[in-house]
Image (cartoon, rainbow, N blue to C red):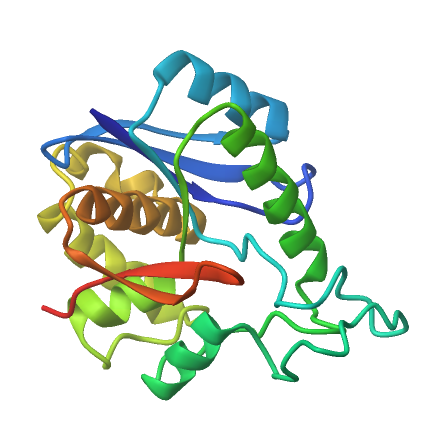
Amino acid sequence: MIVLGVDLRSSPSHPSALAVLGEASTLEALDAFSYDDELVELARTRQPALIAIGTPLTLPQGLQCLESRCQCCDAKAPRKRGREAELELARMGISCFFTSKGSIIRGLVYRGVELKKRLVKERHQVIETYPHATKVMLFGDKVPPKNSARSLAYLKERLPALVHGLEPRLATLDKNSCAALLNAYTGLLHCRELTHVLGNPLEGEVVVPRQA
């Protein structure tokens, strides 16, 4: 059994990070891809038990797009500032971008939504994860801000305890590969039924580790 963890970027011009973990949380691969076709082909070849993508993979209930000038809002849909999973994260004290009209990450969300559709069509199990939430749940609420200079060093100190065989790759880790590793590890925990699922199936769920 293997699990794929993906740190997806909004554009193919910036490579997305990919981590492959075995059942015993052993690092099998740490790589990158640019185009969705590459990930789809890799999934066909490796046949993972699960693919964990650290990007919003659904739109809020009642919305067909995230364009601020578009009025594609179902009048019967609840008016919220984000998806229920994101509101739950906020109530837990975990910061995140809200998936809403005019979101600054809407290009990334669109890519994630379409990529999930392709992978599900290929009969892969896909979950949405959030690496910052994984850090908080595993290491506590004192983790450095995700874009701070301290964050990468912090993860390099702690990830080898979670992922066997990572030590030889520590020098080459960047924040994106660390995020892919956190997503893969969350996926592995999900396979072991050691996660919580936030949100609701109608709108999209986010998987986070159970608190240590």
